[in-house]
Length: 263
Image 1 (spheres, rainbow, N blue to C red):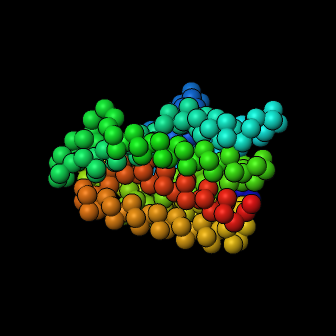
Image 2 (image 1 turned 90 degrees about the vertical axis):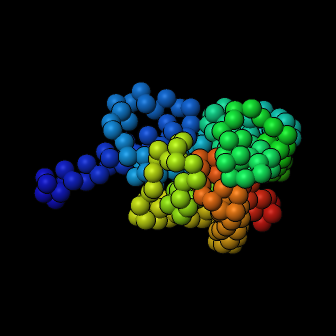
C-alpha cells in the first residue's frame, strides 16, 4: 500500500471518527466536544449517517446499566423504570421533548400557525403530559419484560440505533415546516448518508435474529409512515419535534418486537 493510499484511509477514519463524536455529543449529554477531534467545523446534515451509532452507544450504556441492576436483584418493574429514567438523563430527554411538543401542538392547535406556536412554547400541556406518560410507561414495561440481561442489551441497542436511523430520512423526505429551529439548521442529509444510516440500522436489527429483523423493519416502516402522514396533514412538513416523536415511536416499536418474538 502506497503512502498516498494510507494517507487517504487515515483521513477517512479520522473524518468518520469526528462525525461520530459530533453526533454522539448532539444526541447525548456526553461531553464529546472536549475531544479535539470533535471541535472542527461540522456539516450537521452530512454527519447524520452516524445517528444509528450514537443510538447504539446509548443502547449499550443502558443495557449495561440494566445488567448491573439485574445483578443487584432489582425487581423487574423498578428495573425497567430506572433504565428508562437513565436514558432520559443520558440524552437530556431530547426526543421526549419533541414527542410532548407534537402532542400538544397537534392536539391543541386549530391551524398550522397555531400548532407550530404551541410546539415552540416551552410549557407542557395536557396532551404532552399524557404522551410522555404513555411513552415512559410503555418503554419501562417493555424493558421490565426483558428478564434476560443479554436479551435486554440486544433489544436496547437495536431499538435505539434503528429508531434514530429514521430521522435523517425524515429530514430529507419532508420540507421543513417552520423555516427555523434545530431541524432547519441541520439541513438535508444526502441520499448516501441516509442509505448508510439505514444500512447501520439493519445491522443493529440483525442482532435480534432474522425473523425479528424482518418484523422490526416492517413495524419501523409503519411507524415512519404514520408520523410522516401525521406531520404532512398537521403542519405540512417536518421539524425537530417531529423527528423526536419519530424516534420515540420507533424505539417503542422495536422493543415491542423484541418482547413479542424473543421471550
